Length: 216
Image 1 (cartoon, rainbow, N blue to C red):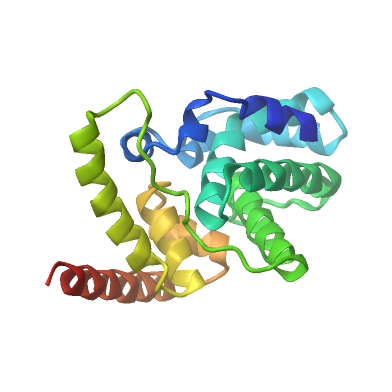
Image 2 (cartoon, helix red, strand yellow; image 1 turned 180 degrees about the horizontal axis):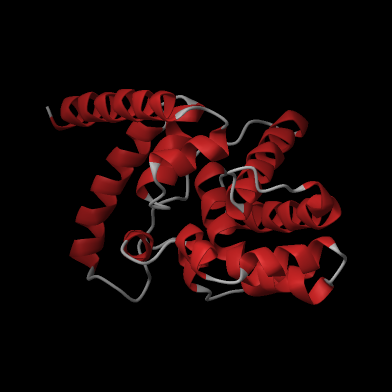
């Protein structure tokens, strides 16, 4: 199962490019959580819990892009995100018998595993800078001038985001990149919706001040 993640994110894969435009465009699409509600996922989960590898592969294909994208925002290198994505689904496969609905979607459960995997990695290694490669410019997209202007704006935003707390960073990524609702983010982070809204408010306020001072 781990090998599938590496193959999914080989050279030239869209998500490997880290394109800011590509990430932003994904926000306009139906989220994986919404697809989960619409599709026959409960039946697939039940089969996967009974040991059906084909069913688990279906869950993998359905959610691996979202998990990888989240991890890419949490670690320095795409290769680290690939390794962690493989680890997340390995853990999920080993522990899927423990999954219970209880108001928490399967994708939210995967995000929780991903958070724990990042935490474990940081305990073992030197801390990695959050969001270092979250924003990028596609090689075959804008002109050199457009890339330069875009790059300056991205650098300013990325620099500002680094000043947020880890929880604030996660809220920003899940809310505005993954387009998750406050309720869904609360499921992932294990907090109530009020706490998520407070984190978002403080994070956006902090970003606004940082970016304003950068311009000044």
